[in-house]
Image (cartoon, rainbow, N blue to C red; front, side, top):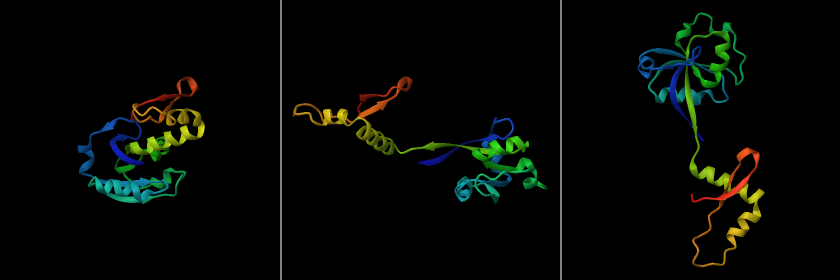
Length: 154
């Protein structure tokens, strides 16, 4: 899984901030996540100019952490924006989206099916009809908390 930047948003109002307003300024990049360097690397890849400030994962931010800073220059992660919003920090955060490789999704679904519905897989795999196409691994679908196995083409 990778995280891909989507857009800049205001911490307090959660409104989109045009990228053009973010490109030509000096930021104070604040990250209290497990791997803050990943966030800083993303900002660097976006050619943003910033001073990195990392905090421990799950840091309990306080206003003292931002004393003497121009709050409008604070750029943070989406996770940290939730905490900074409660402090009234008027900065910006970088919204991201998780991207999962399709082959990983297929692998997880196949493993789930083999573990929880082996009879469904066995029934498909045991086809003795040479003229039939190769059986397709069934995929779970869970409407209304009931799991059903549907055969679907990848």
